[in-house]
Image (cartoon, rainbow, N blue to C red; front, side, top):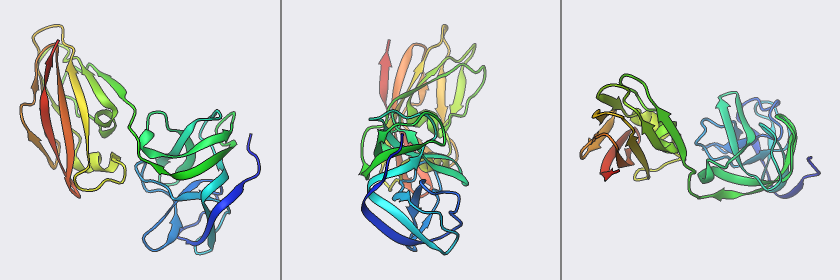
Length: 246
């Protein structure tokens, strides 16, 4: 249940767009010093909108303190939260950050029972943490193009399903868009395990603007670790870090 907000740091900005339907949503302050909705799920919000301004009107943004916020689901007290992103016009609700610890920006102190209920949260500055591991199981009988979410999840269990496969990384643009407000040189690791029941190999091939370095073939019952580094605004390199034989 939401209770009265307690401001510590409220600032007024011009609304860069119509925010009249987004009171108590997370928002971002753009490079012009105006409040807007989020542009991606990897973008870090700057606070919670306290009013409902039309475009060019004053937007009051709580950047620190206790605030109400619209929830995307039932949230218990003590849950760490991030800003949900569904699309350009559907974002900014509070979402459980269990699997996205690198995006934490608050914690629930007043629970909700369902989506669109108002939670009460303590807003605090963005916390750098460790992303939780999400396991992807893949058994397509053919080449697969992995998604950015799958490799960022950390572990892919791949059954080649009857033959050798040449799977493809996401494009560099998709990888970078999924990284948290990344800078050149930022990186993450992921692992692919070949779960074949016969002598079938997996070879990782490059998506658009991705460079591969090292041996990219994974034999049956082997696991290979990879390091992905953002090398420029629209390019990335994936390095093979070695193989584990089971």
